[in-house]
Length: 351
Image (cartoon, rainbow, N blue to C red; front, side, top):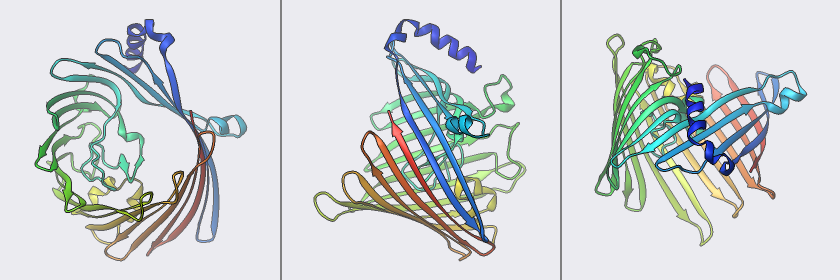
């Protein structure tokens, strides 16, 4: 299906080829980790390319792809891999817009963890996975300046005429006073349903300002005709404090409660924070301090409230000359069964 879509897009925009612009980034990363006296080193790199085409009438095209380990494929015995992040056509009509193709679908609302995203765990603490990008058809109807309705039909396994492989969702966003309210419903594809994650869910999110502080919350109800139903609850605050005219410290603190271990996929890369019991109660915090206009220090931590898991991750970021960013980070995990520590460094060149 994506091949036919690409040919169609090339035909539509053939006259605009000379106006195509490209941008993106190249990054090389090194990681050192140790666990139970065993050390492991790993080097990886990736190339992310975005193509920008001029809009033709009410038609907009987006194409973006990522190639993992292109340099290591040349220098070492490691295979490069190609992945399409975006390849979609968006058509704007008078009262709605229609987007068809591989596209990012995320119902993020500024939280560190999001138990009610369209794809569980696809965007966690600003770390996105490939699950955020899916073959889909989205119909968006704007209602007011601060409200709208999205209707989604996606195919996690790739476009198909088999309706059993189709995942559906609807999301309404509304302005309620000083708060932003969303209501959503998702039904997972029947053919690729998870054996322990409920197939359907209803959820709401609320976000706004209260007495100079940002507050947000989310509630999700997960149900299935085979599995037991369960709930999730997220409560969070974010606060910024000005040390002086140039320096602002940002603090984010949130609580996540999952009624059943079956909901653990919402943790994404932090699924190791699952503890002893069937229920999960997790406290997360993030603190960011800008050293100057070009560098910052941040600290993220997670605590399983049953006392079985602690995770700490300090990060230093610095923008160097020539569009190069330096990133230094550490990860320390303490658990009842095992501990691990890792140090990572990376250079990213944006163009």
